[in-house]
Length: 81
Image (cartoon, rainbow, N blue to C red):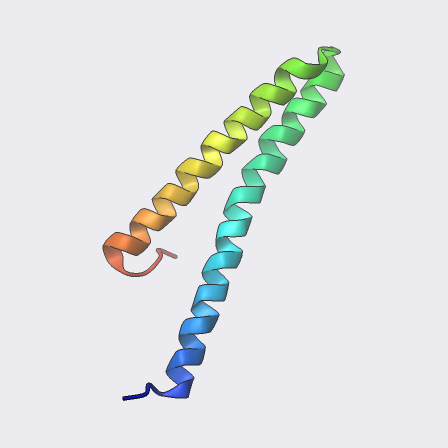
């Protein structure tokens, strides 16, 4: 029993949308916290400290956001909008 081609296409585009959304969810904290750490280090002339702290915070934040998104998908069967 083959599925309707339109249904397969809809699922494929849904998967592409989820992948793109997850990419934005990962990159945004890295740019915000990492870039903020770099700018703060330049302003305070203390190079590696805030850069490392910013990137650590960005990784933790990205992990939390992706975990919450995946939890919604697993529990509800679809992502929240």
